[in-house]
Image 1 (cartoon, rainbow, N blue to C red):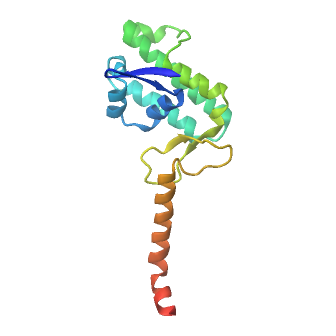
Image 2 (spheres, rainbow, N blue to C red):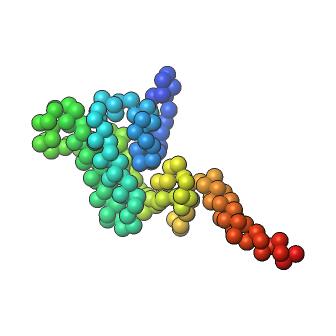
Image 3 (cartoon, helix red, strand yellow):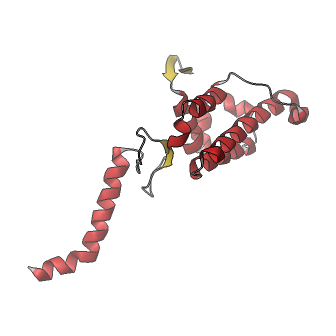
Length: 170
């Protein structure tokens, strides 16, 4: 478990939720939830590169490729931290193993085997399309809300297509 502070409240956060925030939230919301990132990544380019690596991990099907993209995200995160601390000289340093929440979250994801459960929501209008399945088998939607919205959309499309057929048959 990871412990974070929100104002005066101390909250325990599962490591997976940290990664889901990184991969799903827009920059402004992510920086609002994690204020320490603002001084770490002032330009925003690091944030985009890390997010792109995480999204590629979700987009690919092969476990080996997923692990590579997760490793790339960890490497980019550590490079950003070193540049923030050492300036441009930090780009040339070899990153040391870190015990930060971001690194632990990725390590836990890989070690627990949950890297096989990375999925994208099948509902095209989902606000947070990247998620981690709870079940081993296919889980096409991230939540019951997306599942319900997708079913309503399918029914709406069917009804629009077959409306005249049902009225003339009766």
